[in-house]
Length: 138
Length: 391
Ligand SMILES: [Zn+2]
Image (cartoon, rainbow over all chains, first blue to last red; front, top):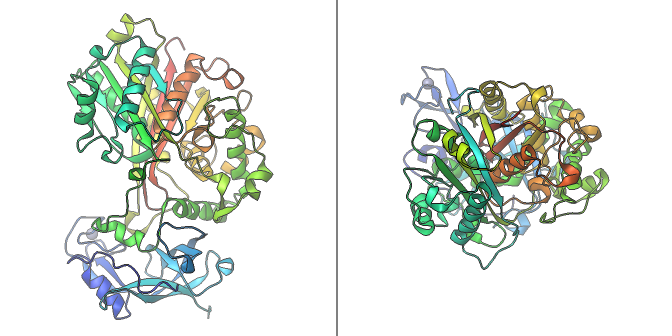
């Protein structure tokens, strides 16, 4: 993905730890101890019980491709960053995360391909965007 | 809607605007033109209307859509609603209007849609980064098309569905559209032409996608009392149900739609089985939307939609399950919240007023299903079951 710096998402108290951890090279998830539910996207309350006792946990940053598509045109997306490879990655912790793949030949991606997180800087130093790249299976 | 097979409400009039491109016509005027058309079809006057519903597409008619349109149309209403769940909205309005009538809140509910997706950029609002959850989608460019492509990819992976099978859905729609003088695309296409069309977001091709049109439509829902006072053939609202699917905390299943929840509930409330359904209007933003919806409604086993649509199953008048005989959103018209045209064509079929070559003989029960939002993140499913009064 060559589009740098990327547009900055809206950073609020609810999501600031997520974006800031990404700028430090860590993917965070949220976890509800009561439900033992690890969930994505991050939000202030557990989507299973609505409890607010949710903690931030560090994700391993790995997963497999659950679904992927290569798109030729995306509104307001820079031409040099197309085709865009959008994907759902099933994280090792369980949640399926809507994200993008980079550093790969779109035609070489398959469902089940192992991937690891990497981070794309934005115009703001303390905010980065998690994306994924294929890795060699052990 | 809480009704059982004891019908309490009927669709008495429908009207689809013939335009597909109307850059100079205000959204409000389009609403008014179809309001007049549907009321005339029902044999009713504006003064008879005491309920009004619109999805109020992107507030293009005003900040408070039902108020703006009641003002413009000169309505005095005791019931109004502007539920907007995208493409399924107007199938939802069938149920909402029926419930309002069952509750005695109104007797004549006018429902209107107008949108200019083709010529008015306000129909495509820019991303609003202050919407919390959309941050996690827009930063990746997760637009409508790739979201549906992701669903198609996963369905192909799990069930072996092929591009050729998806193409059968476009082929059937195009066969129907050739008989619709108002359809945007009236030329029949072949499976080869669909799969040879440009890949726009793999595995979806250009011809897997619906048209983008300006347009408008309306229907009128009336009580039993009103039905007995008018001459027009009315269609019974037999059952309705809605449901939502979403990320589910990260457990999203891209092969499933909310139709698996709304469909069985609506059929059960209507007291009819799949075999009783003579015609279906299926929301067709993309071919994959139709395939997954047919499975989830229960017209075939989950995962067998590809085989099901092969061999002309969906083609009127002789296929086992004729669908979208107006050409649908794929070929005829997709004016913003497209559930409206799904309801209108179902009513035409039940009245025997579809275009002659695609009229299903003795159609007595029809199902209309809308899908609103995005299969890739969150969407609504809304199912209405309609029947001839003399069925
Ligand atoms: Zn919880």
